[in-house]
Image 1 (cartoon, rainbow, N blue to C red):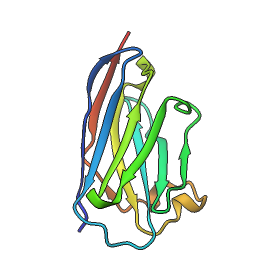
Image 2: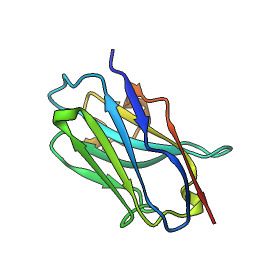
Image 3: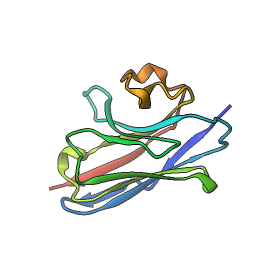
Length: 126
């Protein structure tokens, strides 16, 4: 069973930066898609970004130009570099793994993610 553990969250003022990490316990899938989601209290879960094993990436319009997703295969770690943070970025951030590559192929259904981390809180003050 794959475990995903997020870290790097915290409190920052608007305009600041944070880098989130998601370490996976294992990486045995030949094709996969990993993604970051976020959810603020009272709001629905929102997709933020994805990346495939081959490096294909995608971003929500709300974070384009500010966030960068990346991965280190050797360390089984996913990253989300967040720059120019805004108060509306405040949320619990989760990483997720789709072992079927479905999400990165164009099917935008969060139900394909079989593994989720516990989340890391990001709070951006104005």
